[in-house]
Length: 154
Image (cartoon, rainbow, N blue to C red):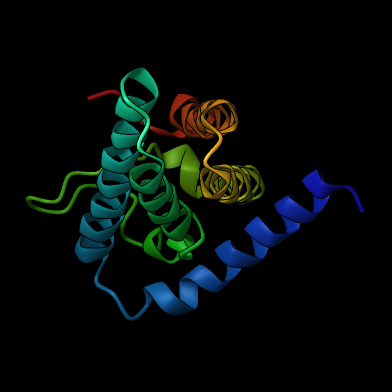
């Protein structure tokens, strides 16, 4: 099987398991937790960017890349359960309704995020700034692909 097919299948499986896990977390908490996870990943992406633009600290980059890979591989699909597709009280969501209607595409994008984040962690492990820069760009592209399709502007 091709890598893209395997990634899509794994993403779809993760999404199918999401309904069982999300049933244990209130929809407003699902929104809060997924936003916290993405904010944490974005903060770590910022740390890597600062290292690529300035003095490259391999240990700091490795720690940040490992954190991003952990978020990407954490089963975030469980935080997109029924009821979390709309804002609830103070918990505002920027997920478009289409995200909840396109499981196969979302699964592919989630798989791409996990794959590129793991590659970033591997590049960071090597300490090679050029490899990190390439892998960092790949993660950014996967984030953008999902945002462009499924994140409302705010």
